Amino acid sequence: MISYDYPLSEQIRILLRLRDLFRRTFHFIELEDYRDHHAALMALFEILDITARSDVKSDLLVALERQRLALTPLRENAAVAQEPLEKALADIQSAAQDLHGTKGKFGEHLRNHEWLMSIKQRAAVPGGLCDFDLPSYHFWLSRSCAVRRQDLNNWVEPMLSTYRALRVQLTLLQDSGKAQKYLAARGVFQHGKVGPEVRLLRVSLDEGAICVPEISANKYLLNIRFLEVGEATKGRLCNTDIPFTLTFCSL
Image 1 (tube, rainbow, N blue to C red):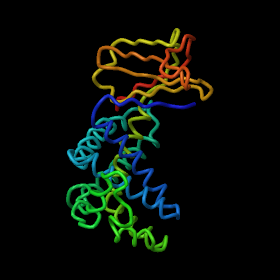
Image 2: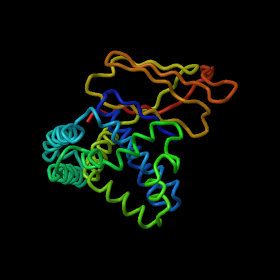
Image 3: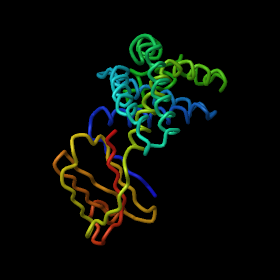
Image 4: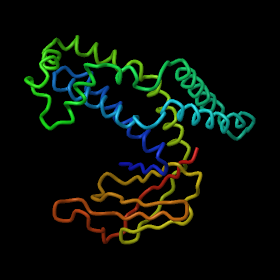
């Protein structure tokens, strides 16, 4: 199965983008070529851009507390498996404690790093990171893999508590929904009243399906159109019935 997530709030949209960028950063840090470490640094700069106008730490603390309040009463429910519930509550508590323990705003240590910000500024110029533009960056890229990796890990480390917290929130959110099977007649599916409590939609398709979902939703109506994929058919509505799984995530 291949799944497509569709966030219904700006906060969840930001968290999904951050999770993707963090994963990309971790992936490239573990590689050895200087071009991989360049890619890791560019991903870090994208993280800074996404969070420039939001207080992601405060938003996560509020969201984690909301999840804790929703889950705690379930300890008295005999129909709820207690072991995964306790694990979820422990994860929430640990993530919140880590966030409370971090000082300053998210990414502040990078925004105050003059050398890194000079690289970020030049990176916005097409081809602006040639060796004649920034000799010091060219020097850094020429250093050993171990040195570059240590620097990258040092720059990422103050952000890890936020990453762990957003991972906890998104995992709980994605696990909160119950998947249901539907059929999109000739590539079109509509569903009434999504509900204001739903934060995320997940559409899952068989990997053999050569189409992608185009989703539009609000609290009154959900509309999904399955579009064909391919150079000749790109953007064309599928004319066959498409079986898929839909999950409403609302924790």
